[in-house]
Amino acid sequence: MQLAVRNTIKQQMKNKQGKLRRLETKATDACAAMGLAVSAMMCENAGDKFVGIGPAPKHYNAVFGRPDEENWVAAMDKEVIKIFGTGTWEIVDTGDIPEGCNVMKTCETFAPTSKFSIICTICAIAAQENLTLYQFDVKGAFLMAPRQEPVCMNLPGRYRLPDGKALRCLKLLYGLKQSAYGFHEPISAWLKDHGFQDLDTDGVTYIKEVKKADGTMSKIILTIHVDDATAATNDDQFYTVFLTDLGKDFELSDSGKLS
Image (cartoon, rainbow, N blue to C red):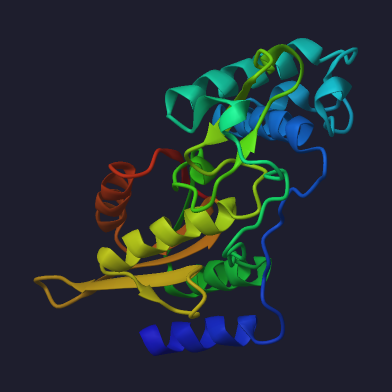
């Protein structure tokens, strides 16, 4: 069974590798604030408050004057407080920052992500084998990994620090090119440490099979799209144990069964 699933996944991945959508802009300060706001909305499932208002603002100042200004400001406030609370930043003197550090050189930045065709394949397998589909996402996924190179920044408007002060990132942050890679490394390592096998060699689709006392197999097929995961299983209790264990190391938002 595992070989059949592996071959199916590989066939779907053959023509084109999926790539992660990343926020890239020269306006680092402003885009960071917007990344925080979007993160806050996603983590708190508050997206319905913003439906029908118009395109999401692309920079900090574009928030003001909109009919939903209050919601955006509240989302940014909440996320800035959260990120300080998780130890993502430390406040430093600008004199401690080397000259020319505005040019940020990064190491690994590419992080694979599941393609829509892979999710469709898992749904098809679930239909054929009468598996149950589940979905969950990892809250603040890009804020977990420590940064590997020095990154200093400031925030715009009401969040800007006094003159002579700046923020030094101790962990990765939404908007940085290497953030997706920083999340992919620990989540893929966790899955492998807990008995999952990589089906597509990219670390986005996994399977775990365990033989039960009655001779039958419990299994989970899992694929990860950025920080969202879709899983198919033939054993609900087996999946519940897995999700509980994962939740001990990652903050999760469980969407439950897919219908």
